[in-house]
Every structure is written in C-alpha cells, then in structure tokens.
Amino acid sequence: MTGGGKDARAAKQQDEALTVLNEAELLALLEQARQNVKQIAKRALEGEVISGELLNMRLRALL
Amino acid sequence: MTLARRGHEYPEQHVRVYPWPADVSRLYHKPPGPIEEVWPSTQLTYLGTYLQQLECKTVVVEEHYIDRDYIYDVALYYARSLRAYPNYCQRIHFFSEEFDDPAWRRMLTEAGAGGDGLRATTIRLQRAYLGFSVVRPLAGFPIGRTVLRTVGATTKEGLRREFTCIRDYAVHLAGYELHVSGLAFQQQDRGVSACATTALWSALHHVAPIERLPAVTPAEITEAATRYSLNANGRSLPSEGLNIQQVCEAIRAAGLAPLVIQRSDPVEDKAQLLGYSGSGFASVLAVGPVSGATHAVCTVGLKLGAVQPATNPPMHFLDAATTVRGLYIHDDRLGPYASVELYDKTVSIEGAKPPQPTFRLHTGMRIRWPDGTYEAEEWMLHAVIVPVPIKLRLTIARIRSLGYSIAEAAGMAFAGTMPSVQLDCRYRLATDYRASAFGFGLSESSLFQLTCETVLSRYVGAIEISSGGRALFDVLLDTTENVAHRALLACVRREGLPEAAIPVMKAFAKGLETVAIA
Image: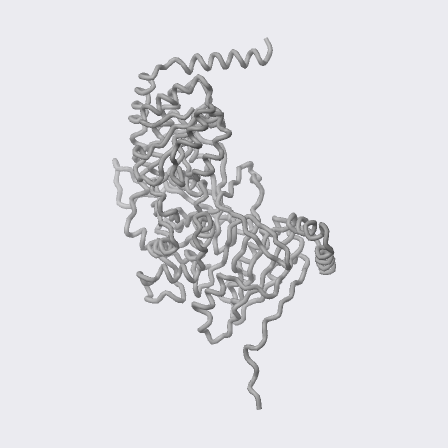
C-alpha cells in the first residue's frame, strides 16, 4: 500500500471516530466538562481578589 | 564694562563616528565626588554586554539631541537646581558594520550625489542598525531613552523567544531615516523617576500608539501618580518610588484603565503573563522577596517551551500557560530585555497547621545579571499591573474560566482521534482577526459571514482550541462585557479542524448559545 493510501485510511478512521457522538451526546459532554473544570475555573479567578496591603506596596528598588 | 554673555549661543552639533570600544563605559563620564555605587554602573556593564551580543562594531554620536522625555524632566525638576543642567542630551547610535569617519563622510557624499545614492546608503545603514541610546547630562544616571534591537528567535537551550510588546521606532540621523524594532527603556534618575515610573513609562510606550494616545513622559507619570496620593515622606519629588495605587492613578491619567492582578498559583500567573503580554499588553510586574513587592519591571516578551501535561487535577486538555518558562523584562537596575527564569517556589503559610495546607506554590523569578550569574536573593512575582484600553473589560481570568470547559469538552470529544487538545486564551484586535480569517479554510458563505456580517468588539477575547500545533476552532468573546458566558460572539472554524469534526464544533456552539461559523 502506498503512503497516500495509508493516509487516506487513517483520515477515514479519524472521520468515523469523530462522527460517533450525536448532538445530544455532545451537549451532555459540554455539561460534563463544565462540572470537571469547576475547581480550576474558580482558581483562575483567584488573582482578581486584591488586598489593600498589595495596593500600598512601595516599589522603589535602588541599586 | 559689559556683562558676560549669557544665552546668546546655540549649542554645537557634531556627528562623530567611533569604533565600538571594548569597554562601553569609556564613552561615559565617571560621576564627580565619592562614588556611592560601583562604577561603571551595572546598567553600563549590561548595555556593553548586550551590544556585544548584538555584535556592535561602530558607534555614531550626535553631540546635540533634544529628548522629549528629558526636557520634561528638566522643566519639572532640573531647571530649579543650582547646577546648570543643559536641556539637551547626546545620542549614541549603534551599528553592526565597521566604518570610520571618512567612510561616514563618503556615504553622505554618495547619498547627495542623486540617483539611487540616498536609497542605497540608507539600506546599508539600516541593515547594520542596532538602535540608539540617549545620554542624559545627569551624573551617574546617563542612560535615557534607549531602543535596541532584540536578540534571536531561540535561546541556546532551544526555547522560543517571543517579543510580543515591541514596536517600530523611526529614527532620524543626519538626514537618514532608520528604523528599529524594540521597546524603549531608560534608567531611573532618582530625581523625577524611580523604578515604577520607568517600568510604567516603557509599558505605555507600547500600548499608547495603538490606542492613539500621546506618549507620556516620566515627569508626567510622577505628577499624575502623586496628584491625589502623597508619598510616605510627603513630597512627590525627588521621587521615592510609587506604590501600586499610585501606578494605577498614573495609568488612569494616561487615558487607560489599570488592571491589577494579585499573584495566584504558578500556572495561573503564567496564564496571566501569556494572556496579557502575549497579546501585546506590556505589563508592570511588582516583584520582590517573599515578604512583599519592592521593585517594578516591565514585560517585553516571553520565553516559551513545550506544553506540559495537566496534573492537578488531570484534565483532557493541555494548557498553553505551561509553555511559559521565562520572561524578557526591562529592569532599570540592569537594562533592556533582561532574561528571567520562572520557577515554582514553595512558601510556607504563616500560622497554618495540619490538616490545613502548610505551604503553597508561588511564582519564583531568577533574573540574570550581565555576568551570566543570577540574582542572589530569591524573588517572587507579587502582582501584574496591566494598562489596558478602557473598553477592555473582560479579563483573561474570566476568558479562561469559560475556556476550561470548552477545552475539556473538546478534549473528551476528540480523544483518540487526534493529538491532545490545547487551550490558549488571548486578545486579538478585531481588524487583525478579520484579516487573518482568509487563511482559516472557511466556506465562501462563512467567510462572508465572519468578515461582513458579524459585529466584533475592537479587541476580541479568543479562546483558541488547537491540537498538535494546528488550530481547530476559536470561541470569540466581546471584551466590552465583563462576564465571559454573556459575551459570546461566535465559534469560528480554523484550518486544522477536519470536515468530520465540524458537527462537534456546531454542537458546542449550540450548547454555548452562540453562532457557528464553519
């Protein structure tokens, strides 16, 4: 079999694998993903909480 | 009797050519009086080392140069000193080609001979041009506005350098127009500016022209910063540094919005650096020992490596934030484009007792000094202060909080069919995004829909989903909103998404209640 033939078969297999899920299943997947990332999504927003102490830090490094 | 003549003469102008000196500090005068610090200063040593790296061979000195930033400093501060500070500077231009004074004169003759002479000479000089440095007549603090070319695209260790916060500067020298791509740097003078002033000045140099705002000078920054909030010692000048609140005030006065982000864990910190600096928003970093921020630097670029697997918790996607290995910063204790390595630093939590966590990870910074060694003290990132356009309200953190679920869903849907899915969150100028859409492989109607029928905010937030280095699809967000899930504009197919996967993207667009452009 030629390299091109192998590529075509791989692409066909990929296409078949990609079309396994229907729309309802994909929407369910999106909902499941939301639940999976809840913890890290919360962590992403941590840096938005600013302390008063931070705002008053004086930046004046001298050599 | 006639009084001594004052103020009748103009200063003299000379343009002179010198070979690159082995020791760059020989170009500068040692300050008078007992030396408070080392001489040559670390900044001069750094400048020499950096230009050596760029293979500088020749310097051309303009003896008279009016520098806008310095003349404002004179007007605000130095004009009232007993010492008669001149209102002009000198300027040094650096070239990678060897030429001497007679050769310089020949070039001028050729340029004036008509025909293609001027163009040919300009091209020759441009090819060798490395940038310039203004020399202020301030003893001990001579390095004024300095714009130098950046170093190559990869490090010795094979990491990618991305200088995302540089711009073009047009430079006029003896009738030639030359260009250099970089970001302006200058040393603090301890009169008008401290580290925070110069770091912010550099950051504004990048964003201000994009937003059609005037470039502010260090004097204007110090005045704006201390207008409503005095320093601890009560006076604003001589500058004793700025606190973060004052930095924010100065950003506001410059016509931009200050966005302050407190340090989080190392992955999130890197995500902020990638999101803002990677999108071209040069940021001021508040850095210092574990106890607190004491110094400010400006980000100019990123050092990127391979993406790392997600470990805590394990996810179905990779995070582009893990590619960030280091930074390039303007550090006024050193010079432009100083190299920084980022690392995870374990810090104990004061007063915490098990079973509560007794330590947490912070982002450590190792700043490289001119001799190749690293700063002895361990420093950490404390905060990122980003001057952003006023209408840019949606933060990278909020874009990421939505991006996580989209990347996770894509990772699960495409598992086993293609390499791991990767998440990257950036801002894109809508005009640039539309222009790049011609290469997305969209259908004729979809290209028309994106370019002619879709409204986009000036900056769009882009959740970019890719796999194996190929872009799959983008989720575009309106950055004038402040909540990501209410800011969805469209899901846009990219060139790497196979035909068979288009229904997956369309289903996600439906789930997100936005339009799919495929």
